[in-house]
Amino acid sequence: MFVTMSFDVSAAISFLKRQYDPALGLLRASPNTEPNAYYLNNDNYLASKILAGTDIGTTITKNLAKSGIAKISTIDGAVLPNVLLGNQTITLQSIGEKTIMTEITQTSGNALTIDKYADVAFYNVLNLFNNGSVASARSAFAVAESTFWDRCGFNDIIFKTTGLYNLYKNCLYLIAADRLGVQATWRTACEARIVAAQTFALNRLGQLQNQRGGCLTEYDVNYTPTGDANVETTSLAIRCFMHH
Image (cartoon, rainbow, N blue to C red; front, side, top):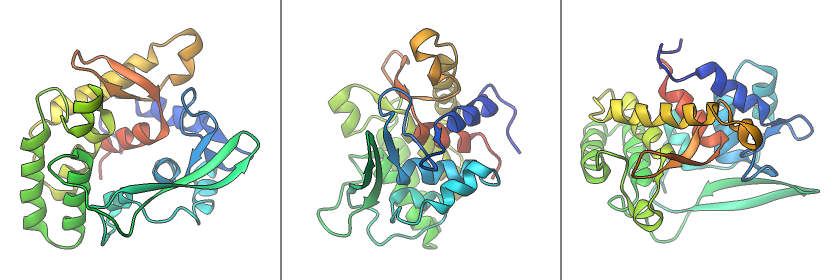
């Protein structure tokens, strides 16, 4: 059952369904930026959960056999031995202009630091919780919350490089809080940014009308959403407005 709020879940689901390519049985990443890119992880993995019970969701799930293991699975209870390592994108197949890829978590290399990357910090929180280390997970959540939030967004090394906040990190933060059963201090502000990212896209006309219902992926210090609406961010946003 969905929370009654200004985030339009039905419009968001409609956006996901519009990205579906029946020839491949997968959703493309985004309508404008990556219209010919099809990611098993994280995009189609996340969309398959949202669309579970539908024909599209069933087909996507069948096509996830080669998706591999990615940090995103921690939101559904997975325990990973290498959650602090970086991600690797692998091309699985090219069909004309279309490319099927997946993102997996590396099994070796240098660990990413949880004091620099907000998303890695929240994946670490989820992984600790899934492993049964509840107290450690809640402590790590509190540290991450206070380390990165600057009252506008999650200010990590990516923001310092680009000047843009990543909306999916707001979503991971809320998902982690719900999984841990703790209060998200900045829930209202995060939800407002998610709603704004969708509302902005809902109002787009002309060439960008295909973004309607989806969430734009980034926003700036003036709270202005930017980027393209994509499957990954929109799927995570839907989760934030669902009862678990």
